[in-house]
Every structure is written in C-alpha cells, then in structure tokens.
Image (cartoon, rainbow over all chains, first blue to last red; front, side):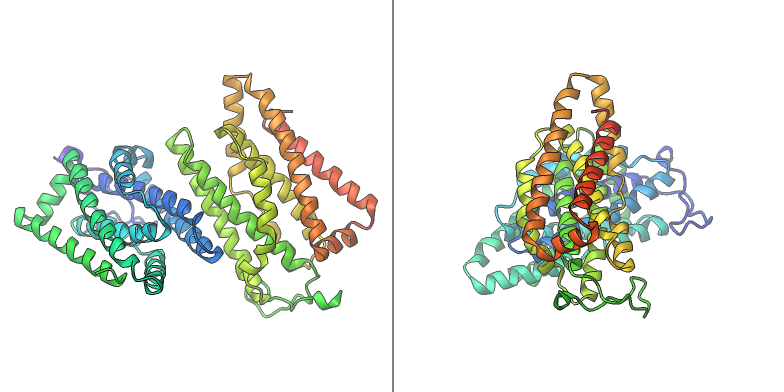
Length: 232
Length: 232
C-alpha cells in the first residue's frame, strides 16, 4: 500500500513546511472533488439560463463561477503533488455523469432541490473522508467544500415557491428521496472501483459498524436539508 | 442634457476622491457591458460542454468564470452610482440576444471564432466610447475589457484545426465576415435606441467624419483578428 503514497505537498500558504506523506486515496479524493466542482459549474451555469428572473440568473451564474475558484485551488494542490488535475478527474467522469443523467431535473425548482440536496450530501461525504487525511489536505478540502451561497438561495426560492403553491411540496419531497437513493448507489460504485478510496474509508471508519454509522450520519444530514427546504 | 448627469461615483479603490460628474451615457455603457459579460459567461459555459477535450472544457469554464469577475466589478461600480445592475442591463438584453440568435455557432470552431471576433469587436467599440468618459469609469471599462485568456486559446485551437484540415479555412473566413456584419447591424440598433449613448458617440467622435473613422478602425481591428486566426 505504501507504493501508493504520494510525495508530500507544500502547505497551501506557499510556505516551505512539509506535511509528511499523504495517505493513499488522497489524489482520488481530490480528483473526484475537482470533477464535482467542474460539473457543478456546468450544471449551475446551464440552470442559470432557465432562471425565471434576471436576478436569479445573475445569482446562479456567480455561484457557478465560485465553483471554478474551488476547482483552481484543487488543481494547484494536485500540481504540487505532481498530479495533473485532468488525469485525477478522468476515473470519476463516468459515475458522476451517470448520477446527473439519472437525476436530470425537469424544472427550475427540481434543479434547485438537486443542487442543495446533492451538493450537501457530497460535501458531508467528502468531509468525513477528509478527516482521515493529513491536516493540510483536510483543510483544503474543507475550504473548497464551503458553500458558495447556493444553499441559502435554493432554500429561499424553494420555500417561497411552495408557500405560493403548496401542491408543489409532495412532488419535490419525492424528488429529494430519489436523489438520496441515486447518490448512494453511485457513491457505492465509485468506492467499489477505487481500491485506495475504499481502503481509506474502511481504515478510517474502523469497521463495518463504522461504515454503517457514516451512512446514518449522511442520511441525517439529508433529512436536515430536506427540512430546511420545507420538504420534510 | 444635464438632467441625465448621474451622481459621481467614488473611486474604485474606495478612496474618497470624487471624479466629478459622470457624462450622460455612462450607465448605458456600463449596462450593455454588464450584460455582455453575463452573456459571455452564458455562451462560454455552454460551449465548454462541447469542448472536444477535457482540458478545453476546463480552459473555457475558467474563462467563463473570469467574465463573472468582470461582471461583479461593473455591478459594484453601478451600485455606487445608485443604479441597480439589473435595471441597467434590461434595455440591452433583446439586442444582444438577437445578435446571439442570428449568429448561433454550428461547431466548436465556429464558437471559438465567434468568441474571439465578437468579443474583440465589442471590446474595441467600448474602448473607443470609454475614452470620452471620466477617467475613473474609463479605467474600469478598460480593466473589465481585458482579455480573460480566451483569445490566445481560440487562436491556438483554430490555427491547429485549420492546419490539420485546410478545407476548414474558407468556411470559417466567411463566418467571420458574417459576424462582422451582424455585429454592426445590432450596434446600430442599440445606439439608435439610446439617445444618451448616441449623444456620447456623436459628441465624442466630433462629427460624421469622426464616426466614419471610428467604424474604419473597428473594421481594421477585425481584419487583424481574422489574420491572427489565419483566416484572412
């Protein structure tokens, strides 16, 4: 397993302090995160086009751009590990696109729920994994997972729409459940296909009980987000 | 005409130095520029999806995000003039969308030529107008018109494609001519519909001879860009 240990990166502050060796699975996590940011950009910029108002279009376009800011930081960090960001992303294109294809929103509100619920789930999952990485990588992951303002925008828009027409609530609640199911399915494929990532999760969570607890926490976070949208 | 003179903005550095009154036409110019940035973001992010390579997709997504950085600066400056950026943009949505609808690219290369040639033409036109504004607004306009790296990317990609298949050159050269024609048509509509902008251009260029000279300069800039693409 030590074969997979990469060269230690410099601290993101550009200082000369080394962080020791980065654990196996690090470049995989950064790669899936980078593709996540790129596809979030792609999705939000496409959704922006269907915003019902000019201010909604501006808001979403700005959030999409913030995702590319995160992407740049991940690419720079990977470069310091001597890894090309595109090479790191390639293995994750198919599963992430499969998730997006299987959950293509049919309305502006569905796309907002998806962005809030999907990004939230992914962020919770990545944050759990990042806890088991070296401190420098962990802090970078936490930083790039910070919300670009999309969540409060989605919550505001979805709540307002459901207040104006309460019949929307049931269908959007079902949509949220479906997103959770598809996300877990795809996450399982991703982990099953990437030994280093699987090892990181199994080692990190301790045992099967630990993994079960991790999934329970993810589910609880999901329920909280659905509540914040007024859909649970 | 003084009725249209807006309150002077603070310098962009946040200092207290005032720039005197801003000439009529200033908010119109900033409004059309802001919508130009928003629609450049929209177009580049859509084009990114059709990039033939992952690195092309990343490059275009990053350039699209840089446009939103320019947008934010224009919005902040307009806010200091007590003008909402959305209000300033509204009058220019229809003509800019008309231009984009009439020049929808049918291939990756057409979209690159359009971005290079269209943005270059618009930038030259806005820079000429900005010369007649107060120095603070002028410097902001020059800043937000700075190239986000798109030009050299387009030049590289188009030249490479035409070297690989010289038969592409003729059709892309025609496409460039068509873009020039449509851009001038739409620019004339925009100016005809906005008295303050028209006044600014007529006063600034001196007389009809001055306007003719301005259009000649725009045409020369266009020819230079077509040459840089290897299409003239």
